[in-house]
Image (cartoon, rainbow over all chains, first blue to last red; front, side, top):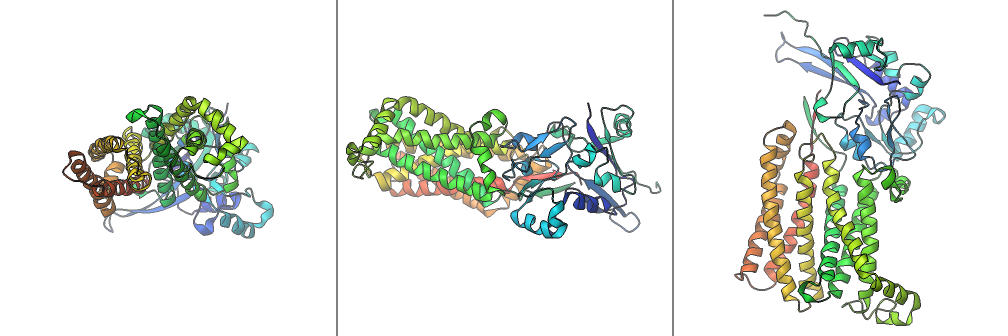
Length: 208
Length: 318
């Protein structure tokens, strides 16, 4: 079996946002309305000039093993593939947005009729993957993955901050990092069993 | 860490939750009152007016959810009863079916009473005129034959709908205000309290039948429910004051909202409680205290849903 997962190294992310751009073009997301499948938060930490640091926090769907979004979906539009990817069937989704509220990671957003019309002009109708409004989110670029490619965000990451792999393969880099305990999931206490792991940032500063 | 309030569900969903709970509880109460012969008699007028009101509430409430949908055509996917076999873990699937079937069975339960209820007995086709109309008459006869079975089906779906409104919010794990066992209970108590308030308004202002014993009973039960609701709200606040930042921030938001403090707690619970105590104890006479209390309870019921939705706080690790 295959169990896709991602490790995000917060130490190497440079905040170039190439992942956001690659994802937007690959999946035709309504970026003009500030709707993205993946985001990189640009954060400033520290309270004085000697102690300040700029950090970046990429995030995307966590493709949980127990997805709260899938449980609440009344039509079965949200489903989990055998390889662990959580997807939305656009034909079934009526856009009640219960999944938006159920997701603890704020990775789902509403695609409205207006977004579909604008996307046809913005991206070219011939390449559009969706034609109906509904809820949208990251699907690990499942179509690319099926062809043996990396998700667009991981493939374009210049800093090796996004590492995509198979947790069921003991020799996979992702599996080795996760098993080492260096990377941990977000909000694990909620019981959703997420499959995106983070290597926490280590401050590169002089110790007092 | 960052903390954000939910923005996906707004006023239309608050109205949906309020009217869903109110409508279902009204239907449940009038059918139970009639089926179990409370006050030792049938209550055709109460059933007909209650059922009509309930169906209107449910239709308007469901309409609010429908308007909120992103893809209106795809609603067909959840109207199909088979959805319960494919998505038995989704409360919206259950809620949709409960609402639909409660309206259907509730209508059938009220059907035989259309000929005897005040307000409909003189209407053509459904009233006494129905005697001359074959199909309507047969339908009424059929409903009368299976009246008790239909009543049970109505009650089950009504209670299911009332419970669903709280279970729906409870299924969102990241928000402490919603994801706890108390919320469905609070919504259920509130739904039956608002339902009794609405039925009292019907009795005092519309039906105007000599049913003082039933009114007194409803006033007493509503008084108990409002008291229980105050206790549950206190338990809620106590629960959220410690244990999670999400809960604490929800309390802070509610505590700083006049609509919650003054609107819901003050005028939606405490004032009606005092008025109902006065009416039940006989210190306040006449219809006015009960009518005012009922209107306030209804407003409070809506404010409860509105602020409960608004105050959902997410804790994000970025």
